[in-house]
Length: 407
Ligand SMILES: Cc1cc2nc3c(=O)[nH]c(=O)nc-3n(C[C@H](O)[C@H](O)[C@H](O)COP(=O)(O)O)c2cc1C
Figure 1 (spheres, rainbow, N blue to C red):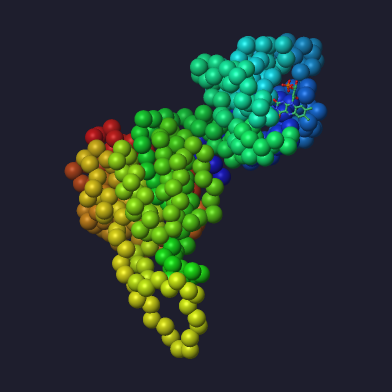
Figure 2 (figure 1 turned 90 degrees about the vertical axis):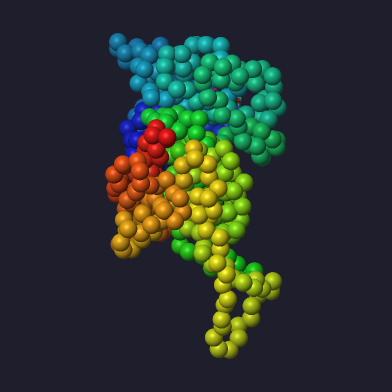
């Protein structure tokens, strides 16, 4: 599930006549499942490529068509004005070269064209077309003009295109479209201009090519933090251990495996970071002797010698400059406050997020029960957040923003 602030957001989806229109039912379903309301306007060509009945079934509303622009069926209501004024965001996906031109030139000859003009909400266009069409200076100029006017035009992905060509022109994934929509709709922009470095997931320490020491961290907390920080305007880098989560859109991702790789990546990204959040569950130990060949099963017990890994939060705590805010995590089962405060001191953290893992929350679970404690001297009282990882992420970022304001 996405963050709670996405609930009840009103999205006006313009579907134009690109082949990728067949993907829009899944897009609508995703938005509806997350609690958004969706109105849909199809162009006449789009209505030949995707079924308006499918879209209206999924959105639980009528799917508007070009013929509705001048229909007298609606009495005194004027659909393009009503729809344009209703929306919190207008998303055009897929956006044909033709609709891109219409939007850039203010062509209001269709319901979608008129609604785009009448809409004052943020507008996001997802052009999708043959790679030569997208490379054409006419299409590029229309995209540029829209950007100059404050619209967001998201470059298409590269890859195999439905028309048989290979190149730039693919509609981005549904997850990317959804992420970019939430970014435009996020009510907070309090991390704008801030560089945020987040670590997430477990690390793996290989013993031989097929065996490793790790932990059950899912990475969800770090990924929620990275997504939410980006929605709030941050320039986010996510250093991630091996997880099965999708990289959030608009976030720079650095994939690592071992604790040492994570440390190196963090140190390389540290300069310029305003906020560093260490949400990864980093392995404390690694095998002293890595076996290049698979270790054969022997009779009797086996002893594995382990060496301690460097403590990444500790290393960053020593290296950070006064303006940088460092946030650590502490998974605790007892004496939570006491252990959290000790960690702040030992690692020179600005705040610590103590995760109460005694009742199953935390590791690998979608729920979090966290206490946020601050380094002494600022007179800040602890903050308690109970809920899903999105709520924990919001609480942690709110606390970091408070620290920025006090610096
Ligand atoms: C099968 C098919 C697929 C098409 N796919 C695209 C496309 O992906 N992107 C695009 O810009 N035009 C595409 N076109 C061309 C548009 O459909 C055409 O320019 C049309 O006038 C667009 O109308 P609309 O922008 O009002 O939806 C396609 C046409 C056909 C027949």
